[in-house]
Length: 248
Ligand code: 13P
Image (cartoon, rainbow, N blue to C red):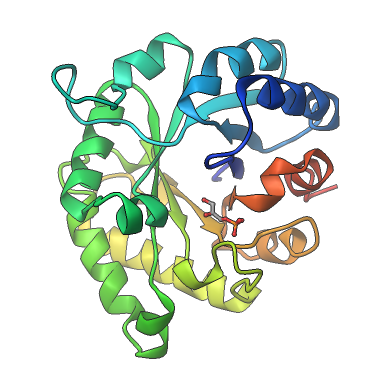
């Protein structure tokens, strides 16, 4: 069985002290969680949040990682730098990075391989835009991302995919339970074919895009959906806790 994983993506929100306050309040609310609980925080918040989650089930994640081990890459952070601080997960290829910061399938692939090499669990984001969905191109876009973003990976049980339809991010327009389930099922089937014999059956696929305390139960009840990558609702302690406790 694939263990559900609920991860918060704080994006560029919460200073270090605000982040520490948030997770301190979250700790008692998620102490009986049966799923994996992750907060992906701004890099500069990592030390404070690490301290604040001590002794809890909450795991630490980052929002990006560079592919080189070290060197002249001003502003970037390496996998080993994250690892040394106890970071266990890292989001890679979020659509905001692809849209605003020139991230490509090639750099997503390189970052994913670097994260794996350092022992981090990559949460790799894929998904289509509204134009692509309405133009009937969803499968084609996903096929392309599947072909390019995951080259060279030998054991897919070590990665998590977040299916995030771009039109559902921050818009309040969630994919329906059926839409999300169907598309995630398609991703899994396609990956099994393209990466046969590489443990794809054990890889978890999350849904992301306006997931909240209200719609989480319906989404999480779908057989293909193994978790959520939560933006806005992860900034509100009670809402994020409700999502983590979707099975209660
Ligand atoms: P929202 O939950 O705010 O729509 O963001 C989703 C997301 O982008 C998570 O990575």
